[in-house]
Amino acid sequence: MRKKIVAGNWKMNKDFQSAKALVNQLRTYVDTHSVHCEVYIAPPSLYTVSAVEEAKGSALGVYTQDVSEHESGAYTGEISVDMVKSVGAQGCIIGHSERRQYHGETDSHCNRKVKMALDKGLVPIYCNGETLEQRKAGQHLEVVKNQTEVALFTLSAEEIKKVVIAYEPVWAIGTGETATPAQAQEIHQHIRGLIASKYGQAVADEVSILYGGSVKPDNAKEIFSQPDIDGGLIGGAALKLEDFSKIIEAFDA
Ligand code: PEP
Image (cartoon, rainbow, N blue to C red; front, side, top):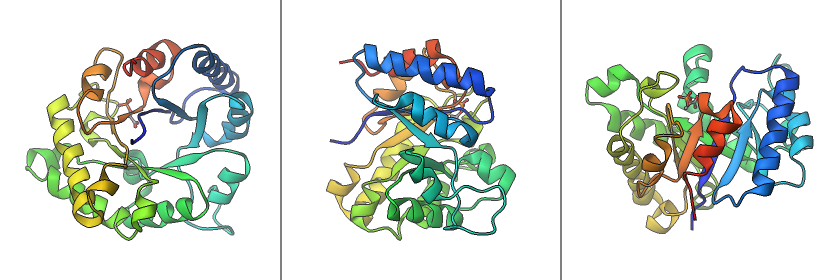
């Protein structure tokens, strides 16, 4: 059975004290509630060490928001997979649309990052999704197909099973616009179908595919109830315990 996941991407928000306090609140929350999905957070990487420390012994997983495609060396400002692993984080987000938009990341970069993460035992959350122009032009299925194939289809069947995919239509990120559950389901089913054609249905059925884009407490349940949607990657609503916990509770028993 594939995992149900709610992951929070904190982006470039919060000072150290408030980040620490939120990790603590979330840790207490997952320790004291019966939670029916995996819960991950991706704080700014400067806080990863502290977040791992705060979350130690709990079910709260700590991820980074990005990782380098290079193993080590003269890459100023970057953090390597080995570094992420050595501080005890479990995985990393790869290919978020903001990395693509502001840092020129492509699916070829994502492919190398995903492979590096898997080789070293980190879980990659690989993000893809179309822009508004692409959707308006009716290209969304094709765009997501190309992204998925370039970024992931050099992996073996055993490797792709360990990848978490986050479908995040760019037009829905941080805009308050959400894909309708039917629009999201269409793409999730499409992605799972692509994986099934390449690796077989049994493999495709093991890959968790999250939806991201303005998920909030009041729409999470309907989105997560779609058959091919296995949870969410949450931006804005991950910054407050009250909202994030309600989204986690969209997965009830
Ligand atoms: C994101 O950044 O991955 C995201 C989905 O953001 P938001 O929930 O704020 O749209």
